Length: 533
Image (cartoon, rainbow, N blue to C red):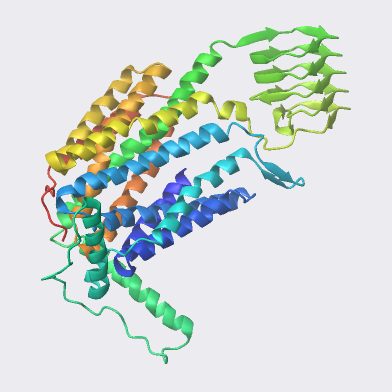
């Protein structure tokens, strides 16, 4: 997960800045293409290092699309409904989360799904999941080909005729949607900025072709850097710094807790599970056939002679300092099962998933492994627990009420009250996690926290696009969203390290950050009635 966030952080800053120079549609197509291509590729690669590289570059595309899509969509909206419609756009982040959770829930546990090509290439269920998750991006990429460029961007770059044609198309579509007779689209006055020629003229005599491309690239990135510096000029400095703090505190708390919740629930599960463990000491079993499930057991100093283990399952079973002699294992599956310091003599393992790493400091004498089970050597039974998928799914679904409320109230109560109120309510929900000592309580507070905090996210997206002019909008959003992903990386790392140690640090850190960010947000200027610059 962290490698994707790192890619998103870089992509948001880089592609967000380019969108103000090359165009919203063009850069959004580039972002989606990068995401789709490397997400698709990552489902097929075999090496772990190359897989991480593909996820990093895929994250770059994901991060780049976020600032562009908000800048792009906002520039088609009227002032009166801009906050509401941008909030509806935010809802699709929730829909994507539900889709991903549902697909993980329905695909990954079926680890028999997939195929093999010889012994070197395995395509397992998690690869199917990664592949399926790339399909919406591919569909969006195709649909975007039929969308127009932002007319505001075209006007900023002096392409008046193209902007006029797009505005006419929007006008005619709106008239038909309202059922009103078509009218002639006329524009009496358009205020456009003075065009400044920022480009360096490149002649054919400017060295070789790659030198000319180097000049073009250098010039473009200089313009992007100038836009970044513009966001810190006296006119925008205070707003940018306050927004940066609000984005960062929100991301640190939200993404930190989103990782902490499932890990904490898993820890509570394991703690309860381990409290019920059965321990068997010095048992002696001979000429017995095991054909049933052994679960949550520890066997110490046992002796097993001429026993058969056939068509059975081991789940959370450990054999310690035990002896297996003349035994036979057939059609055995296991999860979190290990043999530690055992002596195994003249024993046959046929069609089992008792792989080498499950024998720790063991002595195997005249023992044979025949026809090992094929596929991934991960313990899917444990790693894909039903409750973990349910937690992820409910966390995504719980933001639906908050999305609807924020969309309906965004243009009525304003962006500032929405951000401040949502963050302060989220801090209260976070504080009550002190009293969540069961799985059901943790799930309930997670749903409340996600539902309360989504309004702040939506309002942050809206106010960020409204505070900056068209030629700096995607750049500013990209910088702030990149900082958001940096906060997510820190939150993931810090909060996960305290699972099983203490709840105090994560809860106090998240609550304090939300209160501080929420109070600071109340000092931002209200943009509800503001015309896009």
